[in-house]
Image (cartoon, rainbow, N blue to C red; front, side, top):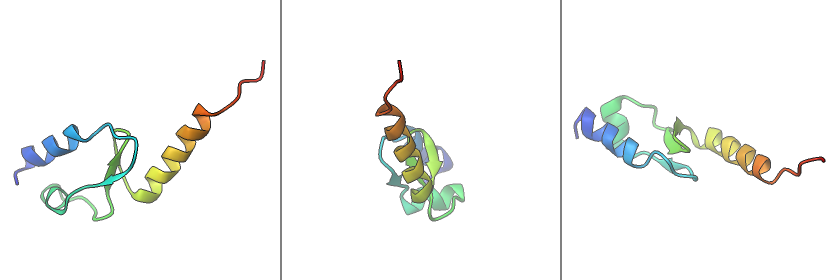
Length: 66
């Protein structure tokens, strides 16, 4: 795998709502931490992604005070 193909993989899977781990070859080629994955257009850990997803869900379900 080349650097270009690794970034192509990332951009093809960039906009997912749930967290997805990156394949080991992508992390190895790009020198990324083993815990990194993708969610919502960001490279984050599972713990970070869970916080982001919970926050977005809370904002989407928030009742507006009139």
